[in-house]
Image 1 (cartoon, rainbow, N blue to C red):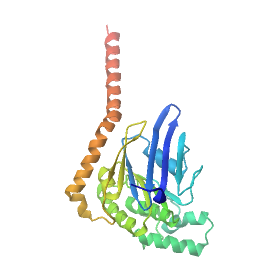
Image 2 (image 1 turned 120 degrees about the horizontal axis):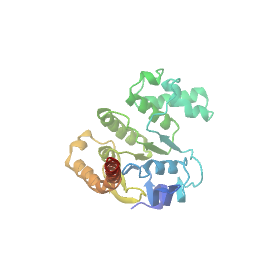
Image 3 (image 1 turned 135 degrees about the vertical axis):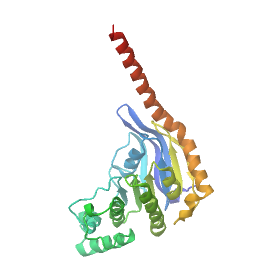
Image 4 (image 1 turned 30 degrees about the vertical axis):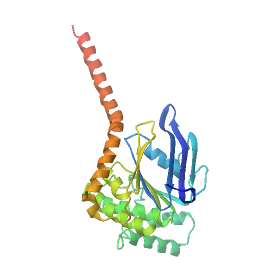
Length: 280
């Protein structure tokens, strides 16, 4: 059980609605210090919305979120977010992209470039400091985005499907690298993913969300330290955790996808009936 003393993020009875559409309702969740927590659930269940609410980018409809003991509107300086689509400035070098946040904060050039270089080295991009985004692979661009977030020295790192735009082999490799990074930085991390394998390999806890309006269906613990051995992905315990996740998610996915298929089928039947009536 977590205790109040080591809770970094507290989500208390939170609801977010966009007009009549309720993304999630009555969510309560705690994220502990130095924990990697993953959010999984069917498409459209509010995972990214919840992440944005934690970051202060999107206001709640009801409830409260405390991050590092702070509650209020707007982003928290100790929190950094890594988006799915990199968000790099194409006219800036790797070094300038990574140092950009410190530049905005008014940090002197020598200091910000030094800190940027430390994180460029940490994500394995040394020798690419003067390269531009178009000269890098997708995986390398994602690492630039991660280095930029780390350069801000956040206590909490939020990641929205950080590896979704990459091919499977690159995702697996970066997953291994990220596990080593978790061991080295001891950050508190919340990340959204649709990959069940990625969730099991990287997270200490996996939170399973229901179909919209989302609530928390279950939480699965992965009691294994970082860095994690790649052989874990071929182990029986890995398969058991992944299968457990899929079993929990299957009904929720069916509610979303099955509804879409059913509606499409009904529209097709109506169209065919209308054509039959129109033809003499």
